[in-house]
Image 1: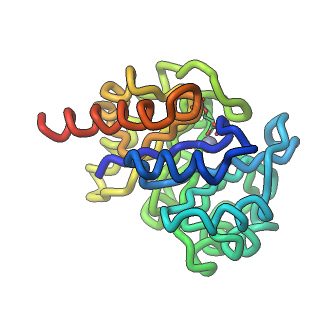
Image 2 (image 1 turned 180 degrees about the horizontal axis):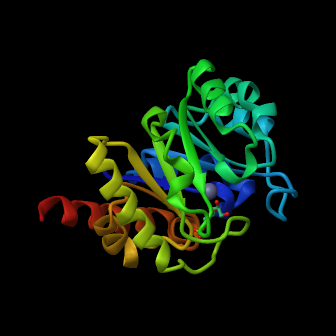
Length: 221
Ligand code: DX5
Ligand code: ZN
């Protein structure tokens, strides 16, 4: 299934609830929540209290992307705040296997993210236990960057590895995704597309529908 996950990082925070509802009405299935700690990435964004508050706006899947050092410290807290999926960066975990178990034990879906320069081999031994893999298509930390083209090769390599192993795990892509490159991104093997600026800059309904149109077109092919 093709899924759009709008990243609220690019939303107008004075109108957050309404903007989330708008994108959901237009077809978004996940809400992507970018948590930044000023250490793993330079920016500081938001944490549990914001997530807890917007949990009241929608029943859609909360896809929490933790761009924080040593995320094992906060798994239970984010699960309690309303996360349905928790993504941790392989680069931020000394004990990745343990953190994945922690996410599962919290009753939440587990996803591991890889920065552009991190090889797929980082997932060799843990892939089978994941619900989703997030392939970063930019260096994390900021919205509005350009997609790094070699990351799509990484997505297709991962899809091949999954096929060989008989796995059908979701592949999410994050950074520089737009309706105009969505077709190419999907063709590479991704099925969960994060959109920040491409969803929230300008007309949110029209922007979301532009992604839905691409999904419908790809579905027909
Ligand atoms: C980047 C974040 C992204 C970001 C995407 O570090 O993880 O989720 O909000 O923004 P766009 O779609 O504008 O590149
Ligand atoms: Zn993200």
